[in-house]
Image 1 (cartoon, one colour):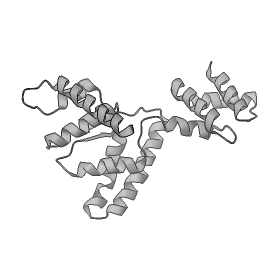
Image 2 (spheres, helix red, strand yellow; image 1 turned 30 degrees about the horizontal axis):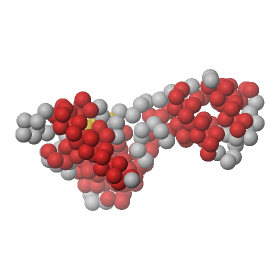
Image 3 (cartoon, one colour; image 1 turned 135 degrees about the horizontal axis):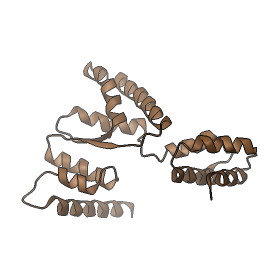
Image 4 (cartoon, helix red, strand yellow; image 1 turned 180 degrees about the horizontal axis):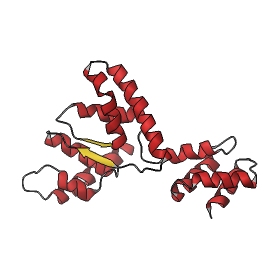
Length: 198
């Protein structure tokens, strides 16, 4: 099914009347995004919308799956960067927004810093999405080896960093091969997650 057909199906199933020219304009706007993400968003619209199918509803669902964190979650991640001991895995937008808010944080205005971060982060996300810039996760290594291991393994589990890259950054432990150790840590973490979910 091509994009225009998918828009037509989603419109029909949500009871939305769209002219051919409206569908073509919507298709043109959506071509800025990866096709699998658009088709997934249209599928969600078919299942979730109780009102009309709109371009905004589709884009909202595309953006919800692009790997970017909500502002509050991003702030919690960024605030960990205050400690030189902590390893932080974050995006360029989180890093830049934290830099923008840092002076307020240094002045002791944590609430003001959080609001400045949120405004900057949401603006940067909007700009990145408008130009189709993908999310890229990077690492800021801290001094504490155990905190480093926790942050890196979590990033590998969430698919933010490749296992091979993480293995090269893990702290050295008793001659154990980092790749084998990472596989063991990931297995243990997945087992814990499954037992919590059960």
